[in-house]
Image 1 (cartoon, rainbow, N blue to C red):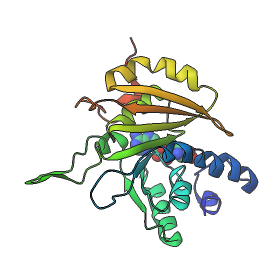
Image 2: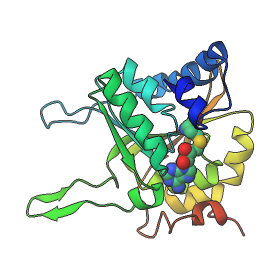
Image 3: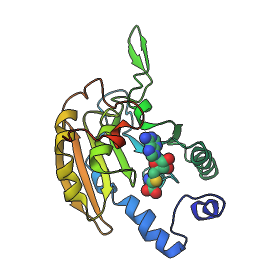
Image 4: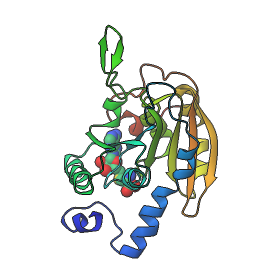
Length: 222
Ligand code: SAH
């Protein structure tokens, strides 16, 4: 479906099916190891682990993960309406009942605290996810601001990266500090590297900043 839709509008530069299997599907599934380390939340009658894929585009890495882990609840986030329509179509066609598509900017979702009720908050994306994943959306300094608010305290952020992982991480040191994120480790995989961050404490209220700022002026840069 990805390669078919790609003929009508641009979702990926990769058009060869064999290459797409390794560069897209296997690369997405490298997150399975990180996902395996996450425990289901306590209580609430067996609530499932929640992942959000920030800037999912054509559904990578979120859709492959949702297929192989039907027990995990996957939210696909993208700001482009056309991509969201495609993702809705794929979700319906494949009967993926564990997938939700949210068409919004990460800056907005990251500040969405849901509604306050007598018993607490309901809905909203802030502090809601056990794992926040992203691939090919930006550098670590920018992505850390776009993802931090979405993770729960103690939750993980897993960024699929390539050879520049260490360099980007070094550049993001100031941002990680301001966002209360720690570098939990970098995993070398068959297709690249995964930079894993842990959310140590609540994200300061002002982050993520308004649309475009995380990319225009990454945090922690003099
Ligand atoms: N993760 C996919 C797509 C990468 S392209 C893959 O690996 O193939 C980057 C995607 O991120 C685009 O679809 C773009 O619409 C989305 N995006 C970029 N900035 C965003 C933001 N601030 N909020 C939400 N989506 C964003």
